[in-house]
Image 1 (spheres, rainbow, N blue to C red):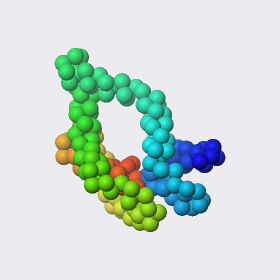
Image 2: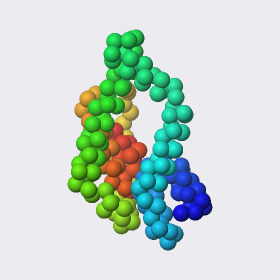
Image 3: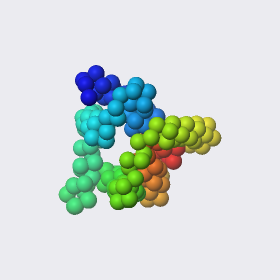
Image 4: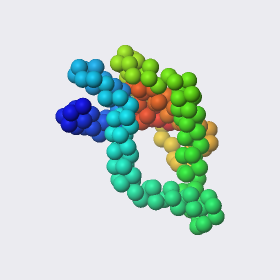
Length: 175
């Protein structure tokens, strides 16, 4: 793989990660559209790690607040709202971890690197996001979010383990 291909992959990842359009799906479509060989899961993970690093730097104050919530969980400090947020995030992570582990256990992740699957998911979830935006919009306060909401968003996030399904898109649709 040459440097131009890596730069284009990184650029596509950087642009699409924060939009509800599935950065993972676009990473799979790149070889299909360009005729390049599939860069494989290792490169996909590497560009996602780069995105994670950028997110941690940008949201460092929020990460610090979550760390304070973690300390409050073990009895150090008094950060009630942060502790609650950390617990809800942990609970919301459980479904995605369970689904991800089952995908690995049954060795199905390789079959997900299909341009057809990505295209169908991009269109289908795009329509769901449109419907949720058009007919289901409501404002919610953090105080109103509970265990059930965290689990539902976690279940939605687990759908995003299939390329072509946007994590942010399914989260906005479910929320």
